[in-house]
Amino acid sequence: MADTLRSVRTPLVMVTLAALLPAGGCVTVNKTETARSPAASRPAAAPITEQQVNAAQQAWCDGLVRVAQAHARGGDARAEAAAMIDALYDYADGKVFFKPTLAFGPRTFRPTREGALAYFVGGDPAFPEDSGFALKGWTKARYDNNAAENGIQVHGDIAITMGNVYLTGPDGREVMVDKTFVFRRCKDGNLRLCVHKSALPFSPN
Image 1 (cartoon, rainbow, N blue to C red):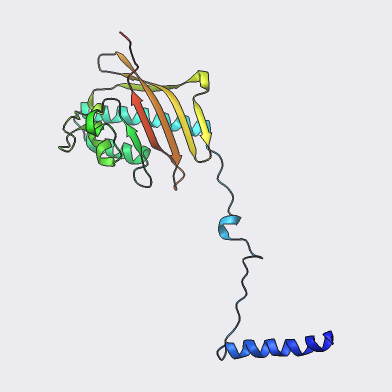
Image 2: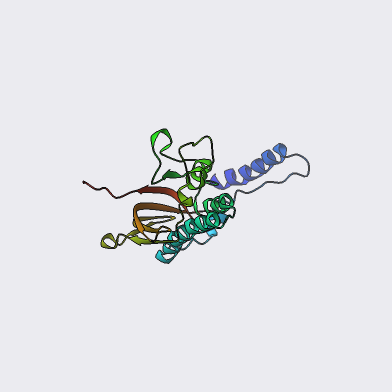
C-alpha cells in the first residue's frame, strides 16, 4: 500500500509544480543552509595592538604641535587643525564625546566637528569663548599612560587609555593635563577618537 502511495504522490507533486510555474520557468533552491555568507567567510580583523594605540596618542601630540607651529610662523593653523581633527577624531563616521581642557558653560562638550575646530583655533562666533587652545605656542607634547594600571585597555575594535599629556609652552614651562582617550577602529582601519576627556589636575590649595 505504501509503495502504491509513493508511486502516485511523486507525479502529483510534479504536476502541481508544473501548474504553478510559468512557461520556461525554473525553481530556485535556497542555499543558505549549504553555502556560507560572504561576511561569514571573511577573516576577523586582527586585534588592536598597544603599538597602534601608542602611535595614535603620539599622532595627537604631534598634531597639536603642528597647529601651534603653523600659527607661530603665520601659516594656516585652521587648515592644519581641520586636518588633525579629520585624521584623529571620529566625527565623519561616528559619534564623538569630547570634553576639552578649558571648555566651560553651555558649550563644555563638543559633539560636533565645528565645536572641536573652534576649541583648537577659535574664530567661530558660535563659540565666542574659544581663543584657540592650539594657538598657545606649544613647542613639544608627549604622553604618559598610567603605568600603574598599564594605561591601555583593548576591547575588540575599541582601545582606552588614561594618563597624562605634557605640553611645553613657548617659555619652556611644561603643563600637565589629565587625559582619557577612547579610540575606535574605523572602516578604513585607522584608530580615531570617539571619546576625549581632558582636565587640569585638581589642586586642593
